[in-house]
Structures are given as C-alpha cells and as structure tokens.
Length: 149
Ligand code: GSH
Image 1: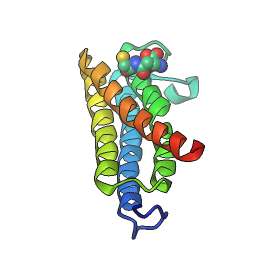
Image 2: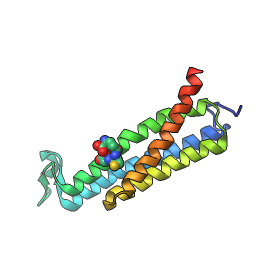
Image 3: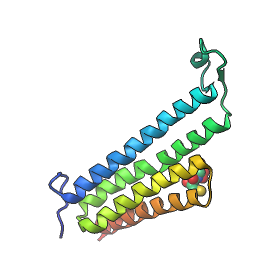
C-alpha cells in the first residue's frame, strides 16, 4: 500500500496541501472580487459602509454583487467538504497518480465553475459544479470503504 502519512515526504499529502492551498486562494480571490464589485457599482451591505462614500448606497439586491455572493456561497458549500474529505482520503493511502487526478479535477472544476458563474453561462457552470462534486464524492466513497471495511 502507498504511504498514508501526513508529511510532505508523502507525495499524496504534498499534492493535497498544494491543491488545497490553490482552492483556498481562489476562495479569497472571490471574496476580493466581491469587494471590487461593490466599489464598481457603489453598492454596500451596511449603512456604515457608505458614510463618506459619495454616490454609494446600502442595498442588498444589486444583481452584480449578488451574483458574486452566490458564487462565493457555492464555493463555501463545496470547498470545505473537499478539504475535509481530501485529508481523510490521503490517510487511506491512495495511489499517487489516482489521488493527483482527484485533486486536479476538483481544482480545475471549481475554477471553471467560477468563470462560468461570472460569465453567466450554462450548462458550463453546471458541468464545472458536477465535475468537482464527482471528484469529492469519489474520495468520500473511498474513505467510507476504508473506514467501514
Ligand atoms: N445550493 C446550490 C443551489 O442552490 O443551486 C445547490 C446546487 C448547486 O450547487 N448547483 C450549482 C450552482 O452553481 C450548479 S447549477 N448553483 C448556483 C448557486 O449555488 O448559486
């Protein structure tokens, strides 16, 4: 069986750490993009945010801001699950090649989902979401089998 340790000497853990860092950075970029969008359209969430900002309004239904917020929420529905189950998956000692493809597919799928959401294009957003979900479900099933057998 391949190495299952939580050490950078284990190539599967090293890959998990690298791809996790990438998706966490992506999550923060979306948070930053929310702020950028708020300044672009001059729409903020709280009355105190618009004080001294000429032309800005406190409003919760701007379509541009809400689109980025929905994207951010969708990331939060998917990325923490990847981080949790991915770590457990490393502990099952998977083959490095197979594990690497799970991490790659999830990361690429979430980036694709992000671009598709911002560009407002379907079915591409759905496909990005589904590819990421399948990678996570595959790892989840392998963890389940390792734990239950
Ligand atoms: N909470 C999601 C929803 O309400 O749509 C669950 C299903 C899901 O994540 N669908 C993907 C999506 O991008 C692919 S269609 N949903 C839009 C969203 O969460 O804002």
